[in-house]
Each structure stands twice: as C-alpha cells, then as structure tokens.
Length: 586
Picture 1 (cartoon, rainbow, N blue to C red):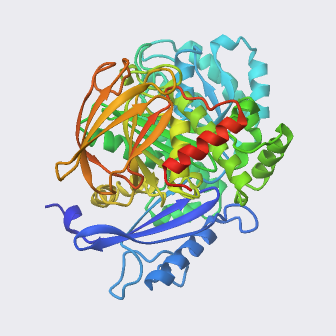
Picture 2: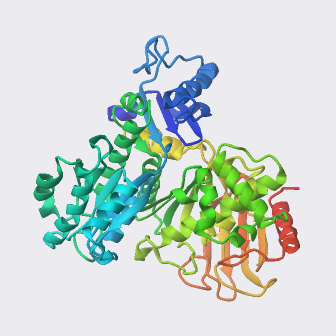
Picture 3: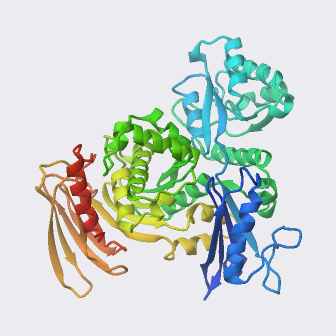
C-alpha cells in the first residue's frame, strides 16, 4: 500500500464564499475518514474587516470549541503539521468564490469559432465578459482601445488562430490590446492568457511581455472542428487565484497555508463530478449544481468529459437586482404561490441585491426565494446545454440528457423549511428525465473535496462513499406528453422479503413510493403510451435491481417535460399544496 493509503492525516477544508466562510475538519475514525466538525462565519472579505482571515479565524474558533483542538499559533498562522499535543492539522485545502467576477476581454478571429471557445473558457470560473475583439466586429483599432480602457478588464483571453493557421490577423488584433495596456498605469494592467496558435507564442512574448503579465497554455481550438479545454481551464483557475491574492487581503496568506493549492470553488466542484463520471459504469452523465450567492455553477460529465459553466448573473446574492435583465419578470411570477405585484417583486429583488446576506423570514419571502431558485437553475441549465457535447443526447426544449446522479448544494436548498421543499425546487428547476438519484450536499463539501483530492485522494473517495451527502431519493421522470390523469408508467416493487406491490402512475402527478430510507428494492418499470424512461427507446421498460430508498423514498414525477406551472394562482396553490403533502409536508 502507498503512504497515501495508510497515513492517518487530519485535514482541514476551508471555503471562502461571498456570504459565508466555512471550515470542515476531517480525520480517521475506525480506519475511515469522517467529518468531525464544521464551523462557519460571515465572510469578511469586504467592509468592515476587509480581510478574509478574520472570517477563517471565526470559523476555526467554532470548530475549536467543539473539538478542543487549537489550530492557530501565536503568530495567527495555521499550525501544520499537527503536533504530539493534538494541536494543528496535517494538511489543509481551500476553495474560493468571494469577490466580484473578473472582468474579461476575449480576443479571437471568428465569432463562431475561436471567440466562442474563448467565451466558453471564461465560463469555467467567475468571469464576466466586458469586451470582445474579433475580425467580425469591424471596429477600428482606436474604437477597440477606447472600449478596452473604459471596460478596464482584469484578464484578456486570446484564442485566435488554429495551430499552423492565421498569424498576422491575430497579431493585428493584439496590437490594439498592447497599445491600450501601454496607456494604462502599470499597476492596473490586466493579465493575458494566450490559448491560441502555438506558433505565435514567441512573437506574442516579444511584443507584449513588457506591457502585461503573460501566461500560455494549449491552443483551445487547434483546428476548426476540435476543441480542448482541460489545460486552459486549469491555467485559468490558477490565474484567477493569483488575481484574488492581489485583490483581497488575506488570500495570499491562505494560499500559503495550502502550499499554493487554493482553487476556485467551481474547479473543485467540476473535479468531483468528472471523477464520479469516470468511476461510473453507466453511460449516463453525472450532473452537479451549486446554487450560490455569487453564481450558479453547473458541472456535467459524460464518460469523464467535463462541461463546466459558472453563471454570476444568476447568483442568489448581489446579482438578483439584475436578474430582470436576463428574463421577463413573468417567469418568476409563474412560480409564486402568493399574490405579489411586479413592483413588490422588483423591490424585493433590489433589496436582496443590496443586502445579499439577508435571510427570508416570512412565508411569502421564502416563497420568493424558492421561485428565484427555480428560475436561476432553469436558466443555468439552458445555458449549459448549449455547451454539452453531442454524445450527451439532448431531448430538446431545454431538457437535460439522462443524468445519474444529480448532486446539488446551496443554502437556498439545504436551508429550505423541509426536504420536500428542496426536492420540489429541484424537480421544477432541473426537470430531470429518466432515472436520477438526488444527492444534497448540506455541508457544502463537494467543492472542498475536489481541492482535497490533490493532497489526500483517499479522503475524498471515502467521504463521497459515505453518508455525508443526503440521499433525498431516486427520481423517476417519464418523458413524454399525455392528457392529465392518463396512466403513463406501471411499476412493480419487489421488497427484500419478496413482497410485491404494483403502482399505476398517472400523467400530471407526483407520487412517492414508501421505500424506507436505506432499504433497497427491485423496481420493474413499464412506460405506457410511448413514454421514455431512459432504457433504450420510448416505450421500453426494464428492471432496476438495487434502488435504495432515500429520505423521501422513491419519487415519481409524471408531470411531463418540459413542465410549466399553471398560470392560475389558485390552481397553482392547490397543486403545490398537494405535492408538498405527498412529500410529507402537512
């Protein structure tokens, strides 16, 4: 066995969020890693502290009170490795999502080729594209320069030219960037990530290295019909961390604690989703959704191929005031169960954006938050679909391909009044199809485990394999359309004692099969009226031999896809009251 498998190292996970700072302590108990304690604090990246370490100290103090373990020395640095007196920890890993999105200028030759690849790369971390420069925009060089100086980007991503392809056209575009940087104060110049034609590296370095900080990676579009993101995605994550070290006090010190291993939260999140996909025998994809205050992050992986999307415009914090720019307010109102006017909704959204850490108190405020979560999840899912590979097998209508499992996290989900409320938000927002186990990350573990995998892979594997994620239940969602009340799925449940029970599921309903939590059953599924449940073809059934009951049992969502709530408020209230009752919410 390798040392990694037999060492009993303790590990501390730190997560710097835009609203909360979290600390999680892991150690071995009976030869398996367990979560021993968790602490959290309000983020201190902004005023009045303006130093992320204050929030970390507070979160660590919470853990110290529970465990009696001291983590910090007299110099306020992390004690590492642990001592014979039981102080400190052996290893530490950390993720970060706090701070405003990086402002990015993307440069490419053609809008639908290299520029599209640069935009997709920017979507893999917390970025907002503030300027595009390409041959298609037909702007003059002086217009590019003026726009660049006005946008004041933190980062420039260049994806121009296939390998061995155009060179002079790319360099011509970069002349504008170089001149704009020359006109900026040295301390305010952006960083450049060059992910274009490999043959241009030397020329780019000669012309631009004295003007701005340069980084090079593999060409993300080496040919017109091939795109590769892995190396560029890793390099961008590193650049993001470096920029945050300069922008936010205390981040550089934290990065020292983790030996330079601080990563953006989406990087860790995507790493875990990709790992689960590679470890699975299923041809279905794995999906992860993090509904955060700073952004909604979605990671999908099919046969290990990762698609990662980070959408700051859909965050549940400061971005809520701008949400109306990305969609009609009627979409939000269609999910509400209370009678609000448009003005009342706008006022709530703007108040939320001003005070992103505010907590909904009344039933009406909670309803708005839940409706908002449905909308931003739905929008993020639609956005990710445009980037997923063809082998994913899209259903159309903004619907995801078959996914197994679906891992979700975010305070709006984990702090819902009941797990039934959480499940309904997911069914409405994600609208899964086929057979999909739902796993809820209540401690915000997944991103941190992605960071931890770099220093202790065994811990990440064992925690994912434990009960640290809450299994809400397996969702079975027949795909098709029929008249309400029409039977669309026949289910035979065989329990461990051999007893059998049959269910006919009608279109337009949500049903919960009463499978005890932790118990397994065999399900034989037979779709009717040519409905599809992901077993090879519409109308084809099959047997699921080991289906574990979740906290909510086994969930059947036969409301059709895509599902849209009734436009009539009273009818909507009646149905959601009924569906919540189905989940045991009385």
